[in-house]
Image (cartoon, rainbow, N blue to C red; front, side):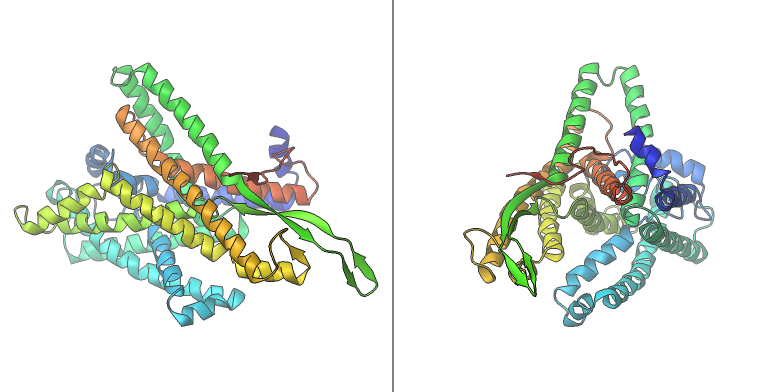
Length: 444
């Protein structure tokens, strides 16, 4: 492991990419501490410190890397960009123009990316305006120096600019750094909050609010969960494929046997991020509206019901969350994997699955197999995202980053490690894995 880290700095291009990624993440973490103008940040942080230990505020604060608690210009995080990406991907399936663009290669992808950026700006304006009312509702507006249109305009402008800047940072990491930029920014925000959580649990243990047995039990459960996430991310159903002997000109290509790995979970952390960002909307909007209606009105009761039942910790939230994860697991798998194209390519080069006729029957067999194993992968992701948080609550342990964040941390780490491994092996250096090298393992 140590030699693999040393090898990173022996490959000049890889070293530059890794250092560039760290530099961008450092800029992001510095930006977390830049507050929006016109807010008493110190007093607000004390107030929010008591409010963000759970529920939707705690969830938003975790995914923004603590920016919400500090009323930072990065308070909206990357969620508007991710939400807009989801909306466009869903619209691609129903709008012929977008579907045509998605099949035009690099140029089409750039067009869709441009639409995503424009939509993100609009979404940021809406969410930024809602955030101004949310800030005004805290402490009856005592944490805002001068409430009015000027404050709202400056806050919306600052929050929108902050999100666009984060989006740009993520794109720079993806292009010039190592790993997926947006995922790494979410990863950095979550990891930054772990020391504070550990310190909080230690304080609770020191005053006997948490016993030693609960801490040990939860630590063991967390380690087992991490191991299970690794197995899930690497798990694959390997289908045997046979290639017949072919004659091309004067060359004879002998038949060979190989395997087609179908991953149990193609979505990785994407399904969890998508489901989280979608589920934030109802409770976030309801909380904004709750702050502007009368306390004794029917609307306040309705909005309070939504906030209560669609916030992390509510069982109805977990039910909806599970359905969304399963949906996005299948949705992303359908986008990332096309059984028809795969079967046609296999047929073109003389490949076939033993016992299955080439062409359409092969496509149907692969699709059926993929559908069967994806449900198990989706259910496993649901269990990872939900059970650690439920167990932490029952053991009275502070675990704000929850199973969702745990899945993101491990998933992004594995993906980044794979990319570093690929760079090292391409240049004949030893990677992190001497055996196996993060290959998919058989499952189900």
